[in-house]
Image 1 (cartoon, rainbow, N blue to C red):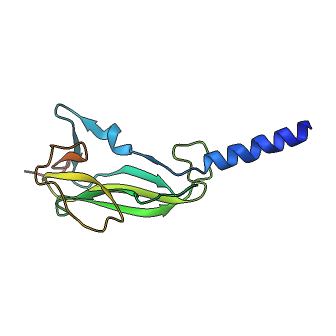
Image 2 (spheres, rainbow, N blue to C red; image 1 turned 90 degrees about the horizontal axis):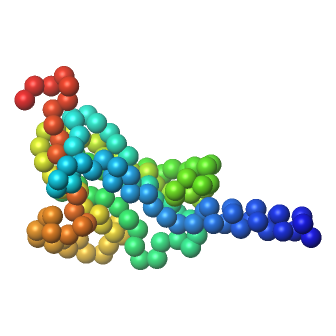
Image 3 (tube, rainbow, N blue to C red; image 1 turned 135 degrees about the horizontal axis):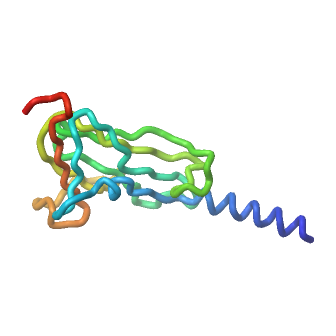
Length: 144
């Protein structure tokens, strides 16, 4: 009986660790008032991790989009993690997204649905919590 309970607990933990989830890594990069992400040219930071676990994403798959890709862009790549308890547990695979700063300037990042049918966007950035301000400053070896 104890062996059955132990096996059941292991299976339960394995299933729970593979649940679909997301980690908004960009929140750790926010600073100042109003909150903004401040990067230097050439910086590359993790901003979002999405797990493709059970039960999957039904109708909404989180993503980030840059309004001016010449200032900064968001690129995602497939990833898998053997560490089941790191949020999100990516034992069943997922995506890790990085923000790369290309040139000095200011732009907005928007939290979007990756598979949205229409690309309609609100007209006023900053009026919604889906918008994130991004400032890119010259790197340590660049002049203004």
